[in-house]
Length: 625
Image 1 (cartoon, rainbow, N blue to C red):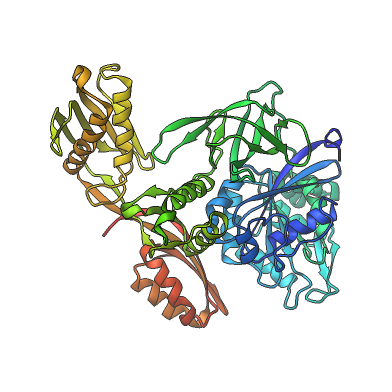
Image 2: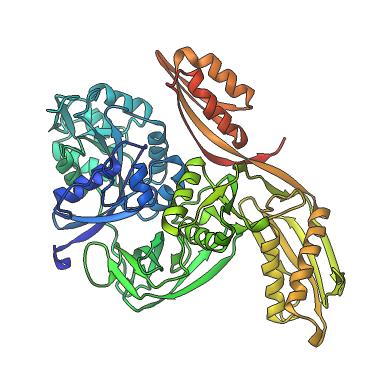
């Protein structure tokens, strides 16, 4: 469809537990709309959005991909997000650019651990979300009892728009369900005061009033229309498209002359060896050859500018410039990374905990060490929280969310970069925080038999939780040449990855309280050499405490295994939250030290006869006992 015939664009995310059928649904939506001329298959490895070799081989989506189709004069950009918990940061990053979401469930497996986590996140963000129950034509599929399960274990705030005939057979078909069906008005009334008043005081709400209320409550994230169907067979997919265009609200218009404001939510290698950045624009306009300045907020709290010039611009779904509400693939921005912001830094992007595992990576062949380092830095730009940094013996330290990530990285390095890499066993990454205030200074000392013509005095003090490392100064501005001042600040940030206990230091303020130099004798190298010595002494005087990461966990187990499972978790130091259930299944929540999570995951299958479902994610950290 020509751009002039498109009224607006909706950016929709497809989210689900692994294997619920996200990529298959994307293929079906693109095929039915004519955007592609044949259906790809996850099993065959030829789907449109899983374009990486590793994704095709493993049958999982790793990086967020974007594809587009049109329906009723509306362009719908589909963002096919990862489902595996090791790539949860990719999911949360994609949520920042969405206008709405489709949460996918399997009619066979039903509500799974990751499904609940995703729904909780979507409701917290109040993102308009539709629920699509997939695989109704598979043996073992359920409908009415699954709907009751969804209301009990996922959210009570769903409104079915379709029912199913012949569920669990190849002849399964969805059929429309009227808003006047029993229970529907009551479900809407739970979150809509107007419908509640009509039910209590009369007259009864009309279908038009119910439809209007459902649209409004879907738009504010309170209610979720639910539809049944099959991505592989195509049943129910037209109903889903119609519901998306009907219930996901149009983005608010922005000022035509506003400066451009947007978010880079994905980065992938370009065929020419550069990189392609996917930018969602909220305001303004971006054109080819335009110079842009992105803002980047580092983990230590610093904000840096990343300038660049667009050398290629491909707007998803149509040609021309990138306008508000749309997504484009940009090339030429060599230094851009995922999470970089165009325009002012706001809190729109979700904040998520950094990885808690650390591993060392080496090239099996020493001559490939430089290529390995370059490849890991490139991959870290696509997922900045992995944070590749040099380590001892020519290896590279890398942060991870889980072991699957390590497997994917090893395969990616081999296939995309030609590097055969070996990974050391992962270890849990602890942190240090100052517990007091410490100060130290040195004036023109000897370091390693070399005279440093520099004076540096630093004070270290505790900072606010989550503030990272903040560098500031009490010395007179201009007392040092800019190069010397910058050398001190850069070295402070580079030195704090290793505190007195050899763990990264965070949430502190480092204050420059004394400085000096000697005419032509002082160099920036002198300040870079002296700063770590003074900083370490100040840290030792302040004292630090070690913190370990914790995971929040959810667990579904057969009722007969409740005692041995809770006994195991108690022996691992778990702190239990809610324990609910009855009948054949129990649901447990709680928190567990990250260093104990792997043991729990390995022992649970034996205790639950393979029927336990475990999910966990980083929930913060606590002082090491």
